[in-house]
Amino acid sequence: MQYNNKEAKFPADFLWGASTSAYQFEGAYNEDGKGLSVMDIAPHPEDVADFKVASDHYHHYQEDVQMMKELGLKAYRFSISWSRVIPDGKGDINPAGIEFYHNLIDELKASNIEPIVTMYHFDLPAALQEEGGWENRATIDAFTKYAKLLFEEYGEKIKYWLVINEQNVMINHPGALNRDEIPSKKSLYQQCHNMFVAQAKAMILCHKMYPEALIGPAPNIMAVYPATCNPADSIAANNWASIRCWLYLDVAVYGKYTDLVWQYLVDREIEPEIYAGDLELLAEAKPDYIAMNYYATATVGASKGDGSDLSARGGDQQIMLGENGVYRAEQNSYLDSTDFVWAIDPIGLRLTLRKINERYHLPILITENGLGAKDILTEDGKIHDDYRIDFFNKHFKQAALAIADGVNLIGYCPWSAVDLISTHQGCSKRYGFIYVNRDEFDLKDMRRMKKDSFYWYQKVIESNGKIL
Ligand code: BG6
Image (cartoon, rainbow, N blue to C red; front, side, top):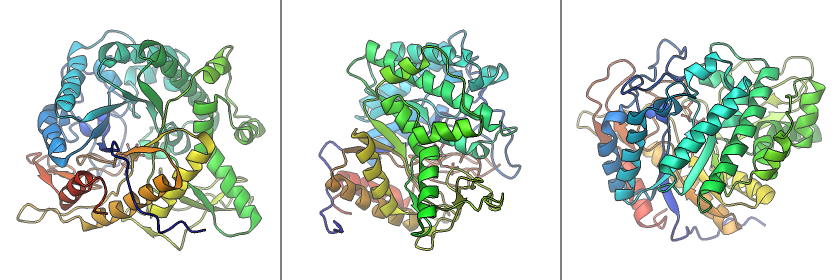
């Protein structure tokens, strides 16, 4: 059965939102006592902006929230910069940093916008990185202390928490995150395990301190298609889906390593060291919902097994690289792609939501989805981003169909509320409904301007999706 002509409907309390992350949006990287994060000092391509000023949200937060209110947002998902509130990641607290997030949260609540807080979005405090970063078990303790501080400070005001943004991107696509050098897989999987333990501790702590709060993981999930109906391609798709996606949700939800992935790690002698008590913690921690970031699907074929699987196209979060003996990245001739060569697959969103629902049976919140494009500011101050409207129109419709399929989708937070700096492709790769008047190196006046997609999304929210 196709189930294609269902009526697109969203529940009355649907969280129409939008997202950002601290290091890509705030700027003020060394102001008011903030410590450096790995992202502040990361090497990055010379022709693109760094994150030091970003969209200067730190100084524009009131205006930004007012525009979000005008947009009609029901929710806003942002991250807290760990090194803004604890400059070296584990020691003294920075009162100005604490105050900034109180002010932001208060401003949101006064505007009837539900704050959704990500505790960690790629920006580990640099001081912790110097001590080994996530490979060092002490980072788990530092994160637990940081989590406790966030719950103590903001717990009364926050209903929705997300622990770690895209842990699976940090492990599977580290090249997208401006690393000095790419760690070995052995190191990456130790980091990964330590993050799992840190996440579990944060979820347990949250439930003890604020039983009514909701907390969950926020990986980047995609359906993986076999390139053909050759069963060998289906095995490859299953390999890659398990390694890239399901591992992260299986551990978060069921507290267990996916059997296939554990075997893959053991076969390659890259399995992490698991310490006494870790598995018990993983089993005890239970998320209340699953947040997921979705941009594209992947299409893969069987590995040729001769070392030729590594794609020459380079890779990032959405451009798969291939791995000998595991899978080979293939093009999907049925899909268009963005100017930045990411596949555009609205139906893939419906499929991905169905798969998550079938596997975990938990509420789902889309915490990122969007179109990176080189928007043009016209002389009369307009941004005609009809391509973005088209992108969201198609994706929102598929989200509604997923709801009609039985998926408990509670909200949709496009990336991004306002223009910000891309992970590795600068500020010309824009995502926002609100334009920020700067370019890669000329900071101009940072003026905020409404794109055509702003007015369109406003109507979508106003009508609770009926105009789609
Ligand atoms: C996700 C990240 O991977 O994709 C965001 O959580 C990121 O931080 C977004 O900005 C879009 O990716 P990019 O590389 O275009 O910035």
